[in-house]
Image 1 (cartoon, helix red, strand yellow):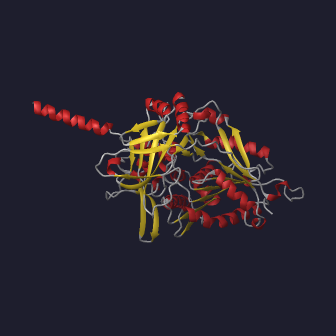
Image 2: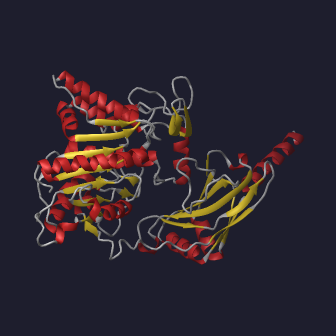
Length: 531
């Protein structure tokens, strides 16, 4: 008995020594210590992330924000306790053991030479701002050795990022910030002392301020960005719209680039618990304000939607839900238009999100090399693990986190939307799937012939066959469903979907842009809204 007891004591002490072993020694600069102190006093949270990339001549340059969207390296996360935050703020150093979260595998399974960078994400309104603050450290070279205890020392010495300065005085872009009482009433998360705001960027045509211009009032093109930010869209648009040689190639209209970013990622202009009444607020508050502030033609026929990726889904939704506000929508490589083909996953019939019927892993993000070969960078299980490693509160900005915030159900008093499947096993949750399917465009079109007719008449979708997220599968399902509904009604569907061979979403957007601009100009000319 004594031998057994001694063995158990030795085993327990060995386990404890492994658990308490210091793996990462973090040195905090003064800015990081100050931010930690303020966040800790404001009941905020802190998560330390370690990004790694293989240290080889072939590896890409390390991004300051990490990680890579197509080939993320190992990532490890530590959630700091209040005591750890206080100690780090006071002493400037912190010893961290085994990470709470790891991607794609635990830290003791990772070894070799790497380039590494630390980041710290703070919530809790440090420095009076409600959004997350991210601090980063310098890129270091380190080597993790297999089955050999070691301590890695790294620094978090970057300065706290300053608030965005917005557009410059010479950029010919109007930055719009408008308080939204409606969002303040309907948004259940991220409440602060400030009223939630609409944000947008307005780019005016060259002739808008010319006294002898033949037109005094202008149509409006509402742009909903996807992965690119609203300000990036506005800047690229301003360059071509104000170039005299592009006058006949770019629609001469008022362009309004809508900011669709939130704490949970893209909000898809979907009315939901976490985001509030986004589409209603756009229709009831921002658009009427713009119609008063600018010389618009305040009629549905003069309002057009243009969206990319997540914004492509938003443009289609706004067109279908508000036919009395918008008349046409162009959607480029739209995301999540069918939950029956959400990439390679069919929420309505599949039983597991992670594996196919043949037990192979369900792919999610790919690069197509040719007709017979593609590289799968992430499967669905990888996507979930990556999102949960980057953020424990649904704010990773990754694909599934932003979708569940927009389409998932939220328990009363919770700030987290529910997954439609078990994140450990991938098994579908039928009650949650039913909530998602209630927001599915394809299912709504199937049940409402008017929506199918509206899509075929007033929507134009461009998608690539090589889309990195298999978005073309969702578009095909949406098109097939709408066309079947129309044929059942005795109508012949037109060519409202263009599938560009061998194009991914980036090339699809680039290739289709000239055609889209030509089509918009033609529509506006037919309505006497373009010279």
